[in-house]
Image 1: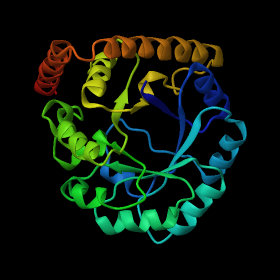
Image 2: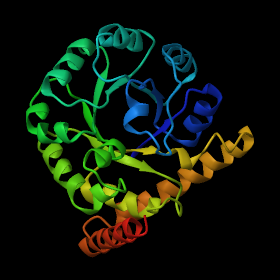
Image 3: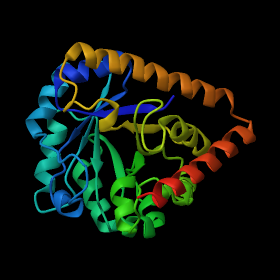
Length: 273
């Protein structure tokens, strides 16, 4: 099954997600330059803190704790040291453009936690072969949001429809590294429905995905009991769709038809934007 990740710094919500079967709780410390490059978009600018990492570590019992740092800057060593000291299982590096940045990140982590690279710039894509040759990388996530902006696209899932994600996946798989891409809403929801994206994850061999803000938007849902229902029913529906996809492995028609649907839906979405 896909490793499901949910971004929150609220321990009570994290415990609900954990109980529902979410595999990773995601603390997001990335703030440097993010507002500038995503200006005008309906995206969340994180207000998570290093202390949130320590507080979350205290409550999680099953889910892993993944922490996204800032991109490499003069304070990266101290930031990453504190992230690890405060209990992160996995540290994610965002928005890198060079092999040197990845080398610096790996040196900062120095084997004290698992490492995840968030490939989300055209420059990182261009140098991916060199990056994948480095030692110390544990997994890769393809960040569709910033990457589609980098390519001047209108909709982040254009990268899935045009074969970019598949080309990157093929390269990553040659190194036997687990990878994931993008995010999903609840089944039946999302501009591109979650169920179609999930089938693409299985076609491509992906092993992880982020539950998007729209899966459970805490700016709109304030009642914790309602949050519990959303997670319990939402995760169960995702797992049921995954089981369908698993049962279809070997049925090329099932996956090809879905791939064609994704392309058609993305084209229609882009036309109407």
